[in-house]
Length: 320
Image (tube, rainbow, N blue to C red; front, side, top):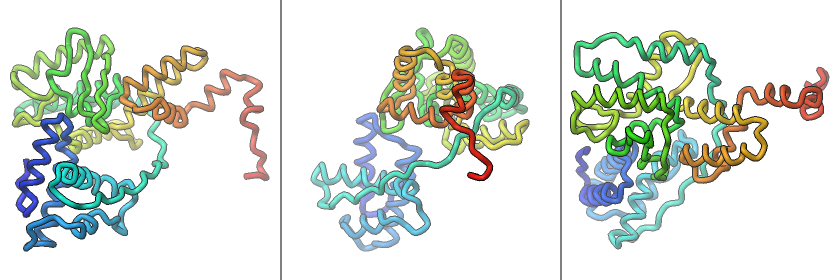
């Protein structure tokens, strides 16, 4: 844990203890923001001994350089901290309003089979085994990214996956630490289960009593930057397009949805299963991926044949 040093340090540490005891602590995002808030209070209010409305409002004010979404990421851990203080009678402060989340306008990368083959080939041929870090990377990277690819779980869910929450007998993952702390379960494909078993047997030799299934040094989990750095390095070795590790989740949803086209009522049942497996609160969140299916027009053309142009009429040149 980072060392907090402002007048609110004891309250922050108490809050962190409470969240950890509740099983709702996200160290990688919350602690970093609370550390910055602690430094802000120390710098801007060096003589203060009590948290005030002005301090909180000034921190939570949207900056000219921020979008709504980036502002939310910066202030939400502090808003949660303030809620804890007011609910437990430790502060008399009105909780600041959180900006409305803006929909993202980007289209995820559409992976090709060749790109994925190139990527995993790079993962399987990492050089260097001289240091513990190099050996860990060589055995962890291929399994970590195959888990993202084959299960659709979020990168943070894979990073925070506890060793005790991976049932290597049944192949069920108990995903406790997720977006919004929403616990859900994921069933592994048989081939992924075998790979996880093999990885577990090898990594246990180095980390016999580890906390996380994919351990970093000092019994920590891997960071978000570790995921980004390794994905970028492996991807760029043989691919020229741009993609991110998180887009493997989009790919998982899209591939499943594409396979169900034409299955009638079974489509809706499978969509529900997919929604639960991916940790979505509502099925509407999963339906969103359907609007991002890159080959949707081709699927419609294949299924409707001559009626396709009646659904999506041809655009005349003069109308462009």
